[in-house]
Length: 222
Image (cartoon, rainbow, N blue to C red; front, side, top):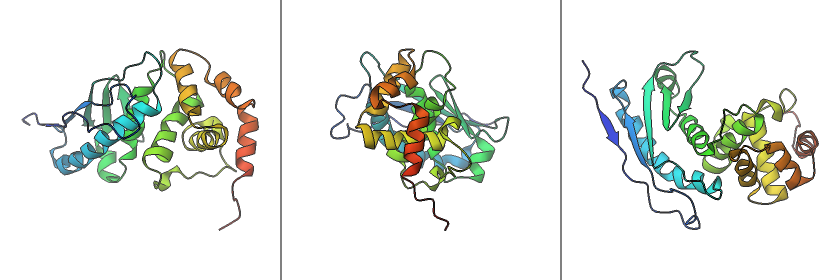
């Protein structure tokens, strides 16, 4: 019988300069390695990343009246279907044990789950914007060197969410002003229409924005 083991990751690091207005920028994180004692070192590395990520995520997705959770828990277990790397259940992040052992460098999946927790939409949100915002934080704010953000715009569009939607949102943030993603998220957190907020910010439909964004890409072979 395994003895229950935890890595208590303590309170979050000091506020990142310029993010003093973030809600609950400090967090206590409990990583339960009961099912994965062999991942103790990996979990320790994850600790450093999560503590650094938290104030950035909460600031990027801040909105009036919202307070981010004060505690998070990470657990490891096999997930079915097996292609799911991680998911958030309340304030708990469940990491696919078998998959993370195969892809130990993919810390970004946890960053995605943390963003999903902070999004705090009032009902399950399956729109392209929900996953797109989480992946925007993962790939363009926290881990901009992660090559997994690449996608083929000739095969997928923003409508699938995730990487394509994240790339579009990054372009919107750079083209229409910093804070655009925060505004869209705030509207969705209040139960509003994220696409309507995007239209108010840009004056364009998602499809028109996508076409304008794709036109800026270098799609030359090689």
